[in-house]
Image 1 (cartoon, rainbow, N blue to C red):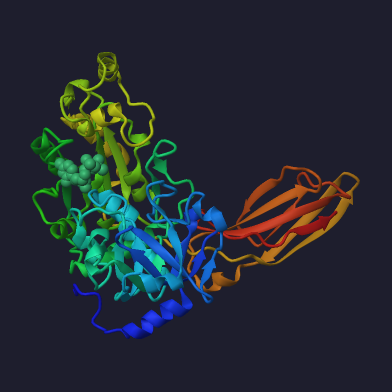
Image 2 (image 1 turned 180 degrees about the vertical axis):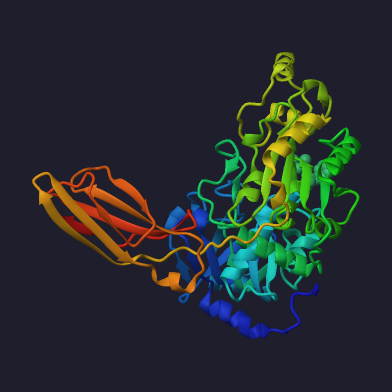
Length: 535
Ligand code: UDP
């Protein structure tokens, strides 16, 4: 990987002239700052002022041209976390003529993606907030290829897993701090600013208690494609065959106190080899190698569980929660495992026995200590049996409870596994089809009146066009019938391509009829155009 900015020498004089004549050009996607990504020609960055600069000339373009709305609150989010006020991007404006009085710009010839990492010390945040969004933002813009340059503007150091960011392109990513070493004014020849939020599935609780995002747009397919890319870059191939269980432990806090007993119980119950891994004792690569072939992953709640995306289809994820933590309220890993197409089984176990927990009231506040709090508040926390819903990120009761160590009660642990896990499914899941039916074709209705109070409605249609190319286990049709002017409808699920309705059909009445196809119970097609049927 190259440390210098480029192997290709650029025509410095030409670039400077272009900047002076054309100024900066910006064209963005997105209606709001929260869904915006901008592409720039000649976006500059002043390392002394720590500000991006837009140079105005006769040829510069700024689309959207928001006027002062650009500051309400920002042009765009620089990280994938939505509308976080420490992650906003904006630029200063200058006339291109000011360049004459400024330090000579240093040009970055690479196509650059400029963004903020959100929390590069935490593995969950690294994958969810940075790596997946960067990977799919790069897929969105074809010139963000393997030669693209990543620039991280959040201002942190490399962090614990910088090698993971290096996998995304062949060029060394640059940190904000390093930009200074190149000069006082840097100009990015071509750059994209911002990240796609399409891949994120979790919100961390800044404005409402944490939980799955309201409108998840990613499926297991895209997660698994990304995981395959990472494995390929790490030279890891999934080894199949041997069934084994991985216990992913933490070694500095949130410990499993009876680890040996837990391992033995798992090995006996499932008749499988059981291994432990930890970020402190193994390299990241070797952990992924091990997880990629595992039948079950067992771990205390925590960022290391993001590695469950590397499990094979059909595997089980078992998440352990310390005392007084409601597992339903902290579900980044449950949501991941449950994405359609992830094909993972998920089980949560929660310590309900206070005698099996070890608390650390004397630790610093960020590791869950509470001795800095008022006596009454400490007593309230100690007496509480469950942390109530709360916002991120400094709730002392939450931190106190989530950093407890736990002796896992083997009986209740095995009970919940036996209840929830389908044994035959372990690691043998088939990839379920996700192909949806097309519209049913040539929908028709025929009506007849039998008597003054009796009528018939025959509805028929042809199969969707794509069905003849597919092997579908179960094809059904759904018909909705609504009497015109009423606001309710009757739904019917039907196995054939026509049906004669007699019940609830009145003479001399107009009915609206919708028909759609359904594959395998849950793959719904679109409705065909509404039929207007008069008896
Ligand atoms: N971590 C670890 N071992 C430990 C404690 C933490 O490997 O004993 C890792 C953890 O996986 C995460 C980072 O250190 O990547 C920060 O952990 P923290 O407890 O702050 O976050 P959480 O795991 O609760 O998201």
